Amino acid sequence: MFVANSIAGGIRNAPDRHRLSALAGILFAMVAVMSLGTQAAHAQDWASIAGGERRIVFYAPNLSDKTRRSHARVTADKQTRQEVSIWRNMSKGKSVSGIFLSEILGDRHYRATTSLRKVTKTWNFFNGRNLRFGKKHSTGNKVDIVYYIIVTADKFNCIIFHQYLGIAIHDGTSAGISYLEGYYCVGENEVISDQEAKWIVRLIGVKGVGVPDRPPAE
Image (cartoon, rainbow, N blue to C red; front, side, top):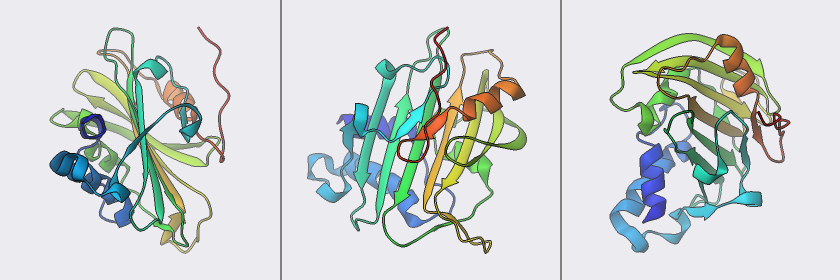
């Protein structure tokens, strides 16, 4: 089943235990689809989406819509919409990426978290690789403040990032009503400079919140 293969190929473990259970639900959905096939509960099914249905926008270099696969669902309690996009192409000169967006539809907030490194535990790309982390940085993009780290994963140089969207209660326990996380890696032995990383995370957007200008074609 393509939905199961796509999600299983991109997402491995449940995220940080301090996030809402809705975010961890992506792992449950993966297991349900793989185990139950077409008998998986319809409310938990991931549907393939394309074009105008996608909320996630990412204009990073060498990512092609031809290799992009996107799926979305509304959780069984109707409280959260989740979307995932994965770009797979490790041929020479190409890059690979994955972004997950979870948007709360009810009157709730995500709890604040600072464990940016744990983004690598969400995505299968990093499984079994030797990881070396750089310093944590932040900048603004069209969505909000985005936090990011340059990571070396074996011979690949990557950026991991996360950010919260929407209304936040600034009491130290609540960060926003939506959450986005992901990664971007260039080809083997290619380098991502600090300046390039800052520019790349500014190319992340969410339709209806903020969308960056598309860079001119090289």
